Image (cartoon, rainbow, N blue to C red; front, side, top):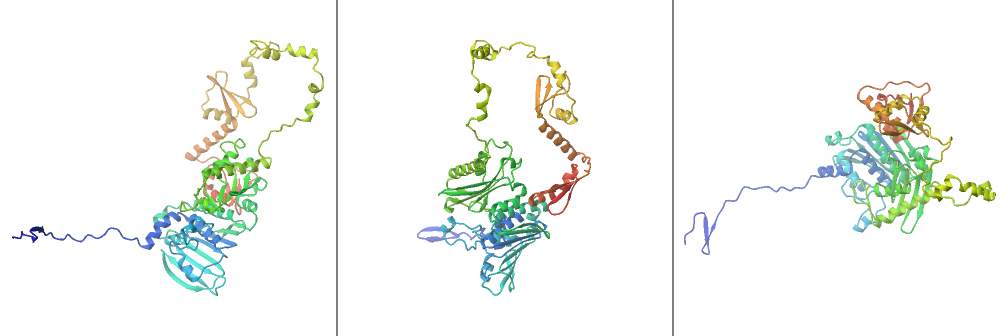
Length: 534
C-alpha cells in the first residue's frame, strides 16, 4: 500500500493533510464597564433635566421631608441635590453606583408591585458614567458619614466625613468625557426650562415635602409643605387660586383626585396639564383626550384646559417599566381608566356649576304677562287669522310671500351700502390686502356687523371677516417681515407695565427676550421673575 504525498493511509483510505490556517481572533468581546455605562446613560441621562428627575426621585424614596436643588450654568457645571432622608451606609454608598444595584427589587414579582419612584438601579450609575460625582451621606445611627468621588464610573476617593443626616450628591461637568453629547445641549435658558419642568413635576407630586430650587445663587422656588392646591398655586401662579375645580372620585378599582381649571383658564398652548399615576408623572395622549372630551363645547376647539389629576390604582394594573424615563406606562384596562377620568372631570365641572344646564322650571314672571292673563277673544282670533304669519302656516303658496308696506319695503342696496359705509382704519385695509380681498366697484369699504365681523364686497359677493382674527394676522405679518428685514420701531410707554411671571415662564423669557426686543418690545428684568415692559 502506497502513501500518497501529503497523506496517510488508514484502513486503505488516504487522508489529505492540510496546513492549519493562521489564528483568527474572536470578534465578540465584553464592553468595559465605563463604556457600557456611557451607552446606558444615553437612555437615562439625556440632558441635565434628566439627572434632576432621577436625583429628586431618589431623595423622595429616601423619605426626605426637605429637598434642595442647586443649579449652576443650567446644570452643565453643577447639579446638586441635598435631602434629609435616611442616608446610606458606607457599603451602600459604594454599591449605589453599580449598574442595576437596587434595594427595591429582589424577585420578579416585586417588579409588578412597585410603589417607589426609582427601582432599576440605573440613575446613579448612568450619572457617574458621564459626569464627575461627589456623594456625601450619613444615616442617623452612624457617627460619621461617607464621602465618595466617582469619575467616568471609577471611584477616585472614599473616606469618612462629618455630615448631616441624609444625602448630598453633586454632579459636576456633565458630559465632560463625551464632548459630542455636550455639544448637543441647548442654550442655558432652554436647558433651565427643562430643569424647571422636571422640578415642577416632582414637587407637584409631593406637596407634603419642602422643595427649594436655587439657580446661579438665586432662589427660584421655595415651596413650603402644604396642600395640593397650595402647591399648584405656588408652581403655576396665583391666577389659578380662584379658578380651580376640585376633582375627587373613589371606587373599588381606582381613585382619582386633583383639580381642573375652569373654562376661562383654557389657553392656546398645551402647558399646565399634569397626569400622575401612583404619584408618578406620566404622558398620555389617551387620558388627555378623556379630559378634553369632558370640556367639549365649553372651550374653543383650539384651546387647552388646565388640570392636575392623580390616579391611584393597584400597581398590578399598571406597567411602568416600558420606557427608560418611566413617563410612558401601560394600563391593564385602558378603557375603564379613560371612562373614569372623563366621568370624574365632567362630574366635577357640573357640581361646581361650570357646565351649562337646562332649567325646565317655568319662570313665574311669565305667568304675569298679559298674553297669559287676558282671555283670547273672538276679535283677537280674527285679527291673528288675517295676518301673514298665520296664512304662511295655513294656506298654500304663502311660505315665501312678503307683504308689501312702506315700512317693509326694501331700500336700494347701494343706499344701504353707502349709508352703512364707514371710514376704515389702516389695520382693516391691511387686513383686506393680506387676506386677498378684491375691492368691488361699489367702493373699498365694508360694513361692521355685531362689533365682531366686517362684511366686505368682492367681485362675486361678500366676504365675512372676523376682525379680531384679521387684526392678529396683520400684526403677525408685520412682525414676520420685521424679523427678516429690520427691527420694528419702538415707542416707550410713559408708565411701564410690570409683568410677574412664574419661574417656568421666566426661564422662557430669558431665552426670547432678545427676539422680543428685535420685534419692538422693550422688556427689562426687574427683580425675581418680574419684568418691566416699556
